[in-house]
Length: 161
Image (cartoon, rainbow, N blue to C red; front, side, top):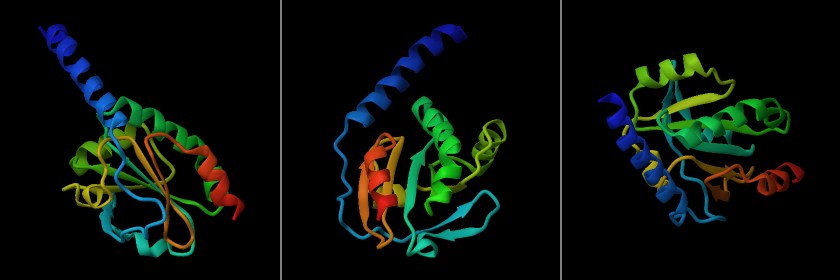
């Protein structure tokens, strides 16, 4: 019975992820990033405005997304280099309970900030149509990239400025 349910649910999840990844992106490069306040896993409020003057990567994700897991692992491997280049990473979990995210983080610990967008307000403000989604913000708080994969070329452009 479990195998039958799994064989039905898994393809649906994969199709949903494919459709999200194929969706057109709504955020416009060159626009000012929208400020937000979200709680991290320690119930500390984090505001995007705290990082003015430095480049920021917003990474929108969920625990159930297999593509997100891979990107989260890559971000974790790259975090030291990103930090050395003055970039802040904010991994924004979309619409999941803090307990679920905490359990996930215990299994896959990360070295960057994890924020909770419990009601998807920030995801909606940024026009997120699916996960994983990266938004790169430059030192002037402008959106320079919006992508479903790590945009290496934009990263190189940002750190060279």
